[in-house]
Length: 434
Image (tube, rainbow, N blue to C red; front, side, top):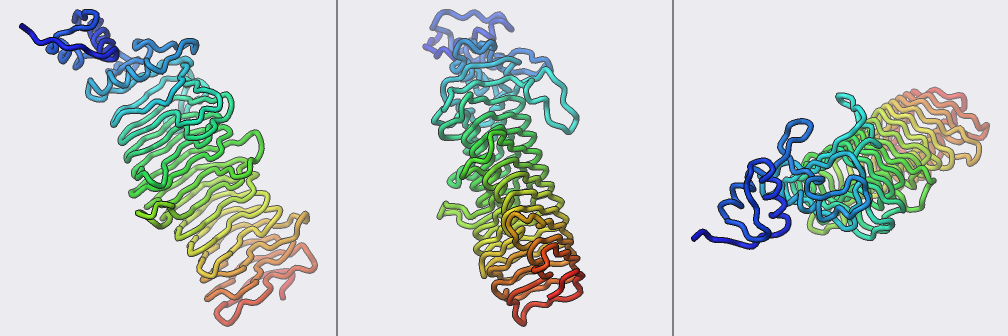
């Protein structure tokens, strides 16, 4: 006599789907184990690309967004794990999701779109299938475990998520592409306690997050590219575009932040087991209408280039034992110093940049040195309603050379203050020298 077993509703759905494809017969709740194994191996449907996938609609999801589709998504992910981690396909439509979804290891959620997408460009985000989560949800929406991916899907909260993340990453090798997130608390969160190394985030558009991307620990090369954080409701205190803590060899490019308290912050990990800050390169950053453009804290070592930082108060602030190199970047600030050195252990090299600090609303300086270890300011152009380089304290070593400094305040000077014998100032051009 053949052995029989009771199976879950998810397995029943897998077998029903297989029966459509292969003709396997499924009794109500008792099946032959040999039939279950054979059917599970063949449980797939043909997507528009002719790939083998587990389809959430065939699992019972409602693309009209009326019925709760949470269980159907879970069943489709079970189908994937039973069939070699083939993709979970989300057709066009809107889906009501009422609980957190956890994507199993090595499973992919793949959406479709009605609009076009360039070869290297982002999708028409609003054409992507949309997952509607509860207003003010107070938990993570989707958890991405090791080697999972999400591609071509929107996550939507009608009012801002109260806590948690739209996409919570807990393992290494996660791939997030072509995604729109509306009103999350955290858009993408990798906590300081979770190694999310080798993460790849690309073509992501966020509307009104409290914190766009937080990567607390990536102990391997990671990439964040073409990610845009847009706060159309104005600046909220404590809001951040990007926060990077312990990130080994992080490469961030073509990222933008509009109206956040802080555009980008580099800081140390809060995890005592893996202390330290980021080793990071950032290029083509656009920070617009933020209070502060870039904060560099802790032991972070950051190189930034070819960027535009037009913000209300501070362009870049260096704290603690951080080291920063900035080149080929345009800065414009209205309230405070454009570049502010705040620690006797912090170092910075500023070269080939354009610094506009001409606002008369609050006279300040292009570069303000309250304290610094090493400071090099070379080959920059500055227009300043204040001082070009202001030394409130002498750095250990410094160079100010080859800059063109136009002072628009008759009381300002190209450089001023106390810089000591360890600082060389030479070869600068200015209309108001000391």
